[in-house]
Length: 95
Image 1: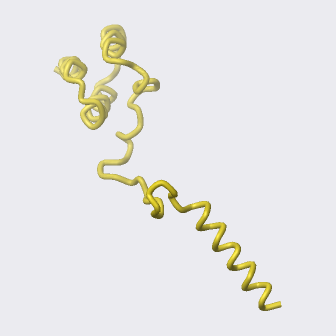
Image 2: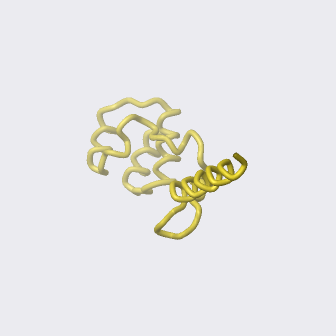
Image 3: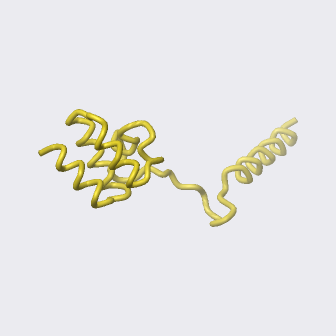
């Protein structure tokens, strides 16, 4: 019975290694936690990541986001795509 338990334990360990090992790099996966992660890592508004620069500028021209949303958009844009025309437009909205 002990032998059977050891064999099953070995099989389980082999399965865990096969499932969780990163085959491309030949290493264990690392957590994707990075600096500055938190609420600003999420889109400041729904669909933000799907908007190209022109669409986002058009949206800013017609929408009326409050100051808190604009500040989140600035932080998010700076941390991600850093499109200068978008940042300029957002900063003008705060002034």
